[in-house]
Structure formats: structure tokens, C-alpha cells
Image (tube, rainbow, N blue to C red; front, top):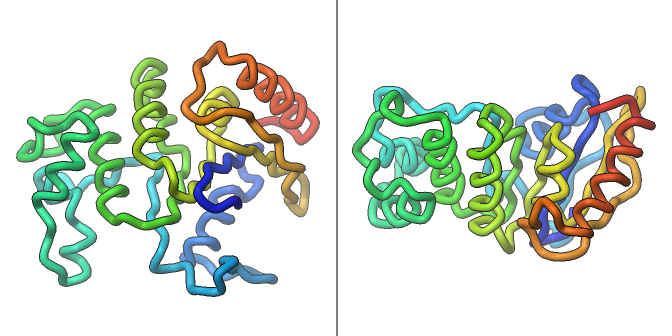
Length: 216
């Protein structure tokens, strides 16, 4: 994974994409090999995770969900920073709302604010927008690309268009045992327009790799 860039990982269901993310995050032990950073420093305290489900606690207000990490670590929540992040994701007026009062897109924006609040240089994203409708998903992609710029991001997705919009480079994971295919580079900076020539070329190359590897 190139530092400061977004790498997308695609492959058939069950091939091991989420398992790989869990190993990188330190949530599961590898059966062989090791996970290491080029600077030699431990990774675990430098990683934030955003999953397919927003996992907001229903009894906490939105701002409380954003600052949950601080509370779990016994730290004083930085409420002004949390409010600034909620403004950045378009939820400035919903800080005191409960999760049940939010739409699906709003809940995912709150989850993105929580991820950004952790301020980690490495962000692992496991199908973070797959439960959203197409228009909301496109807006969330643009928002995430803007707010996560400069961080090292590994994105799992089943959507070739999403991968090509958000990632600087793409890998297809396939086979038994699973292996990563060669890097497919996408010129330009995310988020790319859906009719961008480089995106369309990369999407075609990615579809060929997915079909050769058994699907997405």
C-alpha cells in the first residue's frame, strides 16, 4: 500500500478480503508472514476502521458517537473538534440527534466523522457505502475522498465504479489460496467524475481482471 494514497481491493465474496483487513488491523493473527510499516513502527495505534454498518450506539447522541473512542480510552472528548467534523460532513444541525432520527446516509456521514475524529494516518474501509442508494453513495464517495485525502486508505468494495472513482491503485484478490493480482493504476486525483476517460479505462481493465478471477 502506497503511503498517503487510496488502494482498493476487490474480489469474490468469501475470498478473504475482510480477513486481510482484520489481520492488518491487528484484530486477527496471520497464519504466516507479518504486517509491517516501512518506518518499522507498530501499526495498531495508527489505524482507524470504517465498516459497512455504521455501528452507532442508539442511546448516544450523534456527537457522543463521534467522540466514543476518547471516552473508551478514558480521555476527555474534544467536543469542539467533533462538532467541526460534523459540520464538515454536513451534520452541523444534527449533533444532538439520536441515530434513529437520521437517514441511512446521515448515519454513514456520522460514522465517517467518527473515523476522522480518531485522526489516524491509516484508514481501513470495509464496504462503507454499499448499503446506500446510488445518489447518496456517490455523494459519500466524494465527501470521503475529500476528507481522507493524504491518508493511507485501504478500501474493500464490490463496486468497480466506486473503486475507480476513489482509489489511486486497484488490486483484485482471487484464487485458493487467495493472491493479489497486479496493481491497476488510475491516473488523476480522486474523486473522479463518472465519465472521466481514465476512470472508464481503469474500470474496463478491472472488469477483465474480476472476470478472470471469478467475479466481485
